Image 1 (cartoon, rainbow, N blue to C red):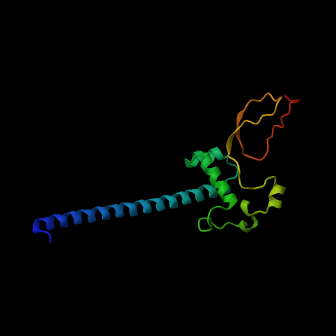
Image 2: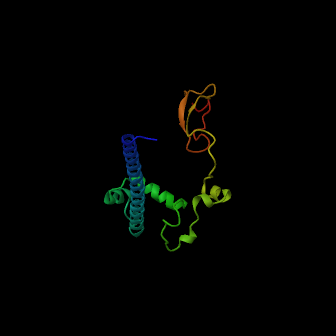
Image 3: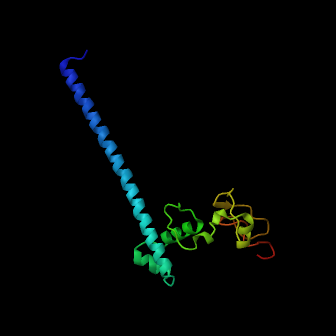
Amino acid sequence: MLKEPDKEKFDETELELERERAKQELEENLRVEAKREYQRMVADMREQVMNFMAENPEMVLPEVAEQFGIREHTIRAWKAHRTMGTYSRREEPEKPGAGDEEPLFAMNKKKQRRLGFVLRKRHTAFIHYFDKTPEGIICPHFWVLAFANGCPFACNPQNC
């Protein structure tokens, strides 16, 4: 059994710990709510920009970015996501003729080839060091930014 002074000290410590837990829980709840509010604000801004661009197709992207105070690459990313259909239905407003468009990743391989590309899983690094230069080629070893399949340069000893 605890003595009376020790019990009071124990109760105070327990109360202090409970207050600290409650404070941390409140802070976490506020963080989560702030994140949700930020996501709602971004979704609203995205819709405003996309609707504005649809209403004003003659405006170029830098002008739109300057008018809304958003970086160009952010607007390009929004457009790409909308084109590919990667935004959820809940966030995407209904627009006339939306059923006519097919999301990029939903296309079959044959249709992708007709459009000039094929989506596939990457098996190599996006950026890698090329050190397999054949004999007789002047090109030294170099870093490759592998954005597509195959080498577009078609090097051979006769062309160098």
